[in-house]
Image 1 (spheres, one colour):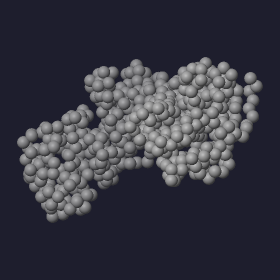
Image 2 (cartoon, rainbow, N blue to C red; image 1 turned 180 degrees about the vertical axis):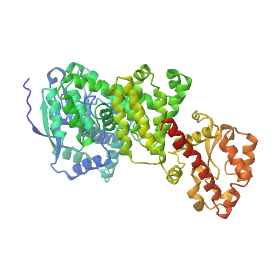
Image 3 (cartoon, rainbow, N blue to C red; image 1 turned 45 degrees about the vertical axis):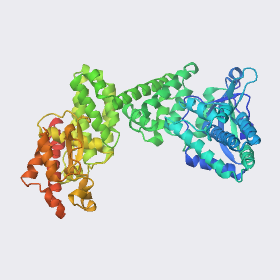
Image 4 (tube, helix red, strand yellow; image 1 turned 135 degrees about the vertical axis):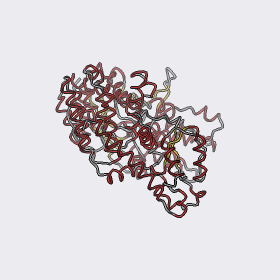
Length: 606
C-alpha cells in the first residue's frame, strides 16, 4: 500500500449510481442527525439544478481488494440522506403505479431502486444494498428504507407504503427525512407528470459534486478526517476525541472499540437525564484532570495523551466505566439499591438521587459519580459515603433549588472535590477533603430570612416540578413529625391543590387567584386513601373529609387546626382576601428555613 491519497472531483452519479461494491459506515460514526433545515437545503439545491459543490467525502479503502467495500470516514450523513430521498421517490412511483396502473411508473420505481439503493445478484438471487449503515438504526434503515418488495405491496390493499414506528431519536430522524422528501415529491407532481419529477431528481442530483478522497491506510484516514473537519462547527469535541481514540487503537481491537463507544452512547441516552457526549466528556475530564472549556478541551486531551496508544485505549475503557456508573446512578430502582446496599441505605441513596434529579442542573453528577466510583475505597477508610451523599444532596437543593445561586462557584467545588476523591488514596487526606468541602458549603448557608423566603416561594407546582414539590413537602412533613426523612412513595402519597385549579365552585376569579394557586401555601401532600375525594369541593367539605380519614400527616393536621380556629381564614378568599394562602406560605417557609439552613448547618458541622 502506498499510504497516499489524491483528491478527485466526483459527481453524485459517479459515486453512488449503481456502484459495483458496497459503501459501509463504521459503527463508531455519529448517528444520523440531519434535521429539517438540512433537508430543506439539499432539496432547494436539487430544485435549482445547478452544479454545486456539496463538500468532501473520505473513504478508507485499505481492505477494498479483499472485501470490495469502501468505508465512509466522512460524508456519511449526506449519503444516508440521498438513500432516503431515493426510497421516497421509489415508493412514490410504486404507489403512483398502483393507483393509476401506469406501467412506466413501475419501471421507474425499479430503476431508482436498482441505481441508487441496491440490486439483486444474478448468481445468488440475494439482494445487495449499496450502503451498509453501522449504527444502532441499521435494522430500521434496512427494513424501512432499503427493503423493496413491490409485488407484496401491489398485492395488498394499502394505498401507501408506511414506515414502522421509530424507537430511537435516530430512527425518528430517518422517518422524518423520508416523509419530508415524499411530501416534496408529491407537491412537484402536477397533472400526474411524475416523469418530469423523476428526471429532475436524477439529472440534478448528478450535477452535484464533491471532492472524493480515498485513503489506503486507516490511521491516515482519521488524520484527514480531523484536518478536514477540525475547523468546522459541525463536529463537537466528542466527535474529534472519538476520532483520535480509533486512530490510536490497534486495528485488531477496532471492532471491540466500536462496540464500546456505542455502549457509552447508549448508557448516556438511557440515563433519563439529557447528557450529551460532549457534556459527559467535559465532566469526566474535569473529575480526572481539570476543568477545561469546550473550545479548548480537545487540544487539552490530545496534548495530554499525545500518540501513546495505551493511553487512548485506557481513556476509552475509563469512559466506558464512567458511563456505566452514571447510568446505574440515574436508573437504578429503589429495589435495586436495596438489594445492593441493604434496606435502609438503599432507601437513602434512592431518595437522594431522586431529589437531585428533580433539581435543575446536572453538575452534581460529577461529584456523585466520583463517590460511587470510589465507594470501596471510602468504605475501606470507614468514610460513610452515604452520609456524604445526603449532605451534598441537601446543600445542592438549598443552593440551586431554593436560592438559585451562581453555578460557577458550585461547579468549582464539585469538580475539584471529585478530582481529589479520584486521586487521593490516603484516609487523612480524604477525611480533610470532606471536612473542608462541608465547611465551605456551611459558609454559604447565610441567607437573610427574606431572601430565603423569596427563594422557597419560587418553587411552584408544574408537571415538570412534581418531583421537586414532592421532595419539598416530604421533607417538611418529616421535620414536623420529628423524624429523619424516609423519602416518599408515589404510589401512597399524592399532591393536591387545596384551592382547586379550577376555582369556580369556590366563587373565585381564576385570574386573581393565579399567583397563589401553585405555591407551596396551596399544596397538600395527601395519603392514598384521600386520592380523588377532595377534588373541587369547598373548604368546609374538604376539612370534614380530611378529619374523617384521620390521616397521620402533620401538614394536614395543622391545616385543619388553623382553619378551624380561624387563624387561616380561607372563607375570606371569596372577598379577594388571600391572606390565608400567604400565611400558610410563610408557615411552610419557616419550616423550610429550619431544614435547609439551621439543621443543614449542624449536619455540615459548621
